Length: 271
Image (cartoon, rainbow, N blue to C red):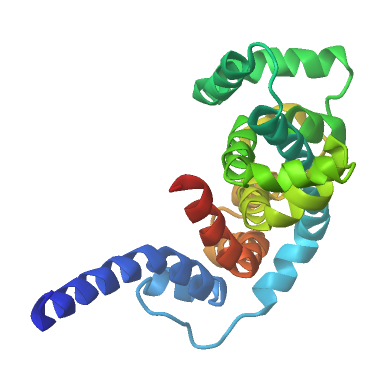
């Protein structure tokens, strides 16, 4: 690639990157304006002063702190549960031979193709049957299993040499010991990838909490943002401040797990 071609490629990538980053930049800068400045010139990055009070107002007026705590608790439970079930399922499908293994795995993987709206009503009926509406169980237990996570871990476990497992068997290790003392430590990139994806999904979930949670004390952060938009729809800086607070944990998790995330995708997707 010539120098000119390389320059044009970098210029194109820089423009695409700037376009993709602009909504985030707009959200943060608007959250620091007063309402008048936000409408006066939407292209100006900042107003006459930085209105940090917008964040205090959001935290105090709509109980955003409680919503974020609810979301954090639910997200942590879902992430831990999905990692546990995916590791167990991935190991079984990758290493344990049993009749119908491939057919069962394909059927389980095929559930990814089922749109969420198709299972929405049946799942809600189950929540009514178990009396889990307006309870944490409805936001956690139905989402402890993920076909994608099982597929991800299976692909990673298949790449671990058989000789390693055979040596452990000769030393007297059972399958549980082999899984948690050998396979899991070797699979940290894949687990970090799964944890990141699960975290983003659980944190940003909106439709399901909207259906099963009606008590405001049980709201998650996405419901809080919708409530904020409904109550303060004319105050754009308030809404942008709430959105910035809501997205901060996901950005932090991605930054911390980025190296493992890229490594995990590369090792499970390309081999």
